[in-house]
Image 1 (tube, rainbow, N blue to C red):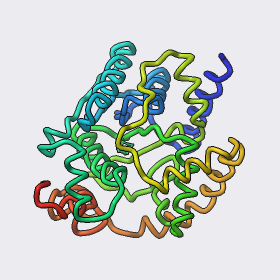
Image 2: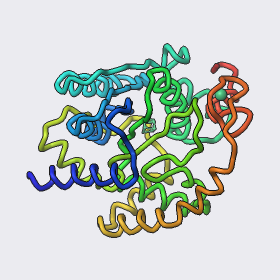
Image 3: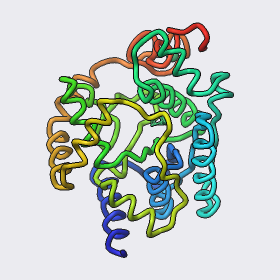
Length: 280
Ligand code: SF4
Ligand SMILES: [Zn+2]
C-alpha cells in the first residue's frame, strides 16, 4: 500500500523537477472536476507544499455535477484548500447541455469537444482573474497515450503539438500555462492512491461523455500494458520539440469577440458558439 503512495508521489516530484513545472512561490489553480485524477493532483501538490487553490466549473449536468462539486468541497475542507466555483449558468445563461445542443443542431461535433473548448476558455479566463501563474489538470499516462493514438488515427499528430507535461505556447500575459504533474502516473495508480488515501472523489462517469473515436481508442489502449503506454508517451515526447517548434512560431492574438488569447481572429469558443444565435 505504502509503495503505491511513494511511487505516485515520487513520479509527480520527478515530473515537476524534470520539466520545471512549478515553483513554490507560484499561485496554482487546479482544475478540479471532482473526479479521482484532479483530486489526487490537488491533494499531492498541497501535500508537497505548493500554493494551490481549486477551481470547480459546475456544468449543471444534473445530480452528477452536484456530487462532483460536493467531492471537491469535502476534499478542500478536509485539507484546508481554498475552493472557487464557477457556474456555467451564470457565465452563459444556460446549462452545458443547452450550449451543446445549440451547437450540435448546426454542426457535427462531439459532446466532449464542445464542453472541452468551453471549459478551457473559462479556466484560462478565471484562473487569470484569480492571479494564477499555472493551471494544473489531472491528465495522466492513460489519457495521454489515448490522445496520442487518437491523433495518429486521425492522421494528424500536429494536434498534439501543444501537449506534453506543460503547454508549449509562447508567453502571453493573458494566457495561463497548463501543466500536468500526473503525466507519467497511470490511471490504475491514481485509483489506488485515491482509495488508499480515502480522498473524496466522484468515481462515476460523466453522463454526457460520448465520443465514439475516444471510446474506441480507450478500449484499444486499455488492452495495452503500462510499459507500452509509457513507450507511446516517451516516444511522442521525443518528437514533440519538432512539432511544437512550428506551433510556437504562430502568433497569439486576442479574439475579436471576447478578447481572450487565440490563434485566429476569433477564438475557438466564440467561433463554436457563434453557430447558434441563442448562445452568446
Ligand atoms: S466527459 Fe466530456 S462532456 Fe463530460 S465533463 Fe468531460 S469533457 Fe465535458
Ligand atoms: Zn473569443
